[in-house]
Length: 141
Length: 412
Image 1 (cartoon, each protein chain N blue to C red):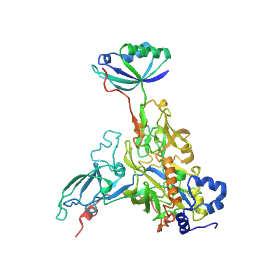
Image 2: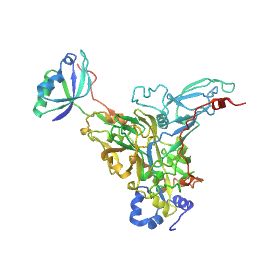
Image 3: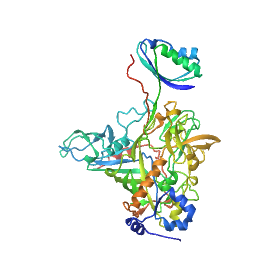
Image 4: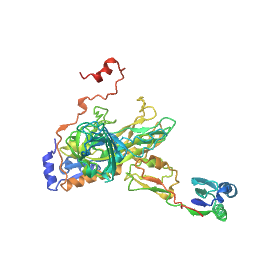
């Protein structure tokens, strides 16, 4: 299974090599999408975790046991339909066809569940209709 | 030859709300079903549309006078310079102009978040715009500095005057090099990583009137959500090029210079754009009605995407250095399928021009004409046709010498 999650760390937790443990002990493929972690400072990590269902769940338990708050990630890339002019340029760059064109109407649509948040669309959109947005809470205590 | 009608007959029907109007997309099936002769008797007007980045666009503005009066030497709108080498408080804001503070490509590729096109868009959206102007002061214009906030409604005049719009056909850009290119055709991935085209094809105004038989100087049009007019042929208007049997050029050809009152336009149809690594520009919405004066004109409007080809151009060396690299032509129907084949390789293709928006414009214009709100105008002068043999020139390479340098100062 493959899932995107947000992990919130306290200052103490951010000192630990959490990613290393997830890879080594739980055989998970870890793709860091966004991170804001500094030593001795609280922070967050947006990751895509891929592995067997058992290992995934064990990995999540491991994080939770450490006191890391783990939440499912949602609404990661926002496509502002009102700003989009429907040129379709983004569809060349979207690796997963999350942004795709209906070839009959030539209209662009965005399928959130296919998005891997690579950010290519943000660069190539001339109207800046696409925004990378992580629903991350302000502070973790 | 066959059925004929005049502008006046069409306008009479428009005034009565009886004109039969179809879009350049709808006309294709009608002609196919009914044949030219029957369709020509039925259809009065075909509406076209296009909505894409058109850098050669901008607006003339008159700010009104300050107290005391100022002769502006430099003027900035939200930090974007407008050209004011004309009368005291007149200026021209160009779509591609950038703020002086823009880092441009110093950190490559630059973002070009805001430019002249965005200023025009913001004016239309009713937003506050910072106006900063400086002058050197004269007896008649003593003021040296103005710093204030303006809105569209405060301006005496604001009219869009675009030197080159609605290009008749355009290149399909690719990258044969080995690094990513950031161009006005968008991001081009190396080694034929993608193809980028920009035309509304079968909906595009000049594709539907390839020999400029109805579109000419004075033609009333949909421009930026309001009405406008064809002012002149556009810059780089170059009609005598390779054309298909249907008359449609296979390379960029005719262009239009357009004019219209900005105050009755709409921010949905003039949109500021930012091209990474290239610059800022503006998407312009244009719709042009084509009066079906005879079967010939109708036949041209029935052009289909599969009948339209555009040249595939390499933007690594071919375009920037004008190197003749022959990559052949791409068919528009194939381009719209999202994939074309170049040198045996399947390449993803997307557009810079918005087809759904082009369709919407053709539909809006159709509605205006059907409701009797928009009458057609007969051009006062035609655009130069292929027979005019216009030559497409480049900048001459000459070494400035004493004579040419002194010429600048020779006023005595």
